[in-house]
View 1: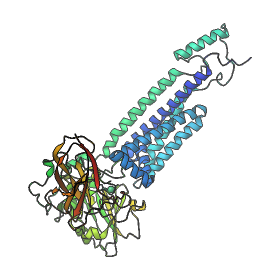
View 2: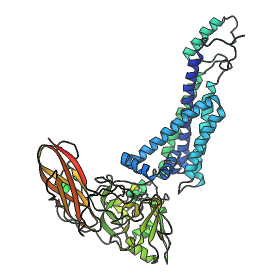
View 3: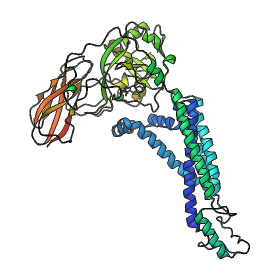
View 4: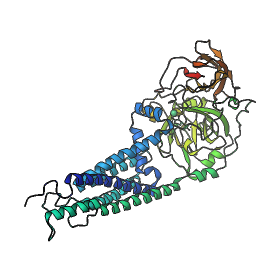
Length: 554
Ligand SMILES: Nc1nc2c(c(=O)[nH]1)N[C@H]1C(S)=C(S)[C@@H](COP(=O)(O)O)O[C@H]1N2
Ligand SMILES: [Mo]
């Protein structure tokens, strides 16, 4: 007997394209089951062991510096969301392929999911704070994914017919009858005929079950992961009163109350910029918190949070924090009122040795930040902060304890979720960013920024304020000058001087003629440095150059 011509029965071309589409869908559903189950197990083991987070974390660690800088520039503080979305999209593409491969070869398909599971497991285990248990979510997720894939591919089984075997005509039917019935079944999507190519009903049933299982395990896992939340513990904490209060603010300290669009003197905790490598932030229970001092100390000890809270030398200070990644005119700087332990006193009571020039600060998630020992000892108001604007540190900003050293960029001074201070030397060890070729010492460069008028958003011609902020931490700002078009530099009014570690607002009223204008700003520090025009990129030691905006008066 001859094999039927291609036009007989369900067109092989069409049915195999449909089969492949369903196989790809099977791959997607299997991946969804895998990720759902992984989230569920991560709800038991720990949120950071979730494969999406672990893989994202690892991608951050492995990403070359220019790409990372590009991501921060392009996505800003949504860089992590972009990363998670990217991870999920790439996983989805792999899943589609796994489905297609699995249709032809079950073992290869299952192997594909196993490989994805191993990638997740490896990423989770090799995280700085990772342990062997962290492999479980990925591995058990992969096992569930493989089971789902096999169950979903079964109804798509190639039949002997599809493999080229001759059709068996039903008793009493002509080949033509059979062809009609075959087409009907194909259209109706029922394949319970013996030897049917495709059991659509069974596939969609299994698919529905898989989707439900993925949703329930995923949502359940997310719910379970809330166990690791410390919001409640944080809300219940009572901050101690500082022995030394921040300097009183002079009247009219905040010019933003009078000038629309000007950055407020203090940044609210919710509005405070955030820069770190943590996709899921470390969650440290106050009762479990320990700060240990190691390395070049004569009498190193460790501290509980209560030890720090009970001290009688606590200080409250207003300090502007700045990120080295801030572009000219950028928003990666903020000011808060901080409460904490004076750093020099803490280092001295542990007997810091004179040979140490670097404090390697370790975060709970394994991140390291290397601060110069000299600055930690000598910069006034350097501290271990636990209070921010009247509240315990927000979890994203380092709860329960972080370091702050005025005058140094955050990447060399402001370790969040701080659990260990190792007194060492710059020769002995490179911290995380220095390993990635950022400068080892990071003094904050003098900077000034125009907040209003906003670029290219037309405003009514006539008199209005040009305003912004300027900073030169530890030295203070003495003067801010503004140039509009080809005018001479004009001196702006400054907000009252509060502290050299705080930025200052500046305002210059100006009569705008209708049309386009170019505005440029430059600051001078209290010790006489005039901000230079030369542009530098944030990498490797912080940006510099004048901020200019093009504005339109209508
Ligand atoms: N543990 C940890 N601490 C960290 C970082 C980090 O990635 N991990 N980033 C640093 C950088 S680059 C900056 S600019 C500041 C930002 O602090 P913020 O997020 O509270 O504004 O935190 C610093 N401390
Ligand atoms: Mo930073």
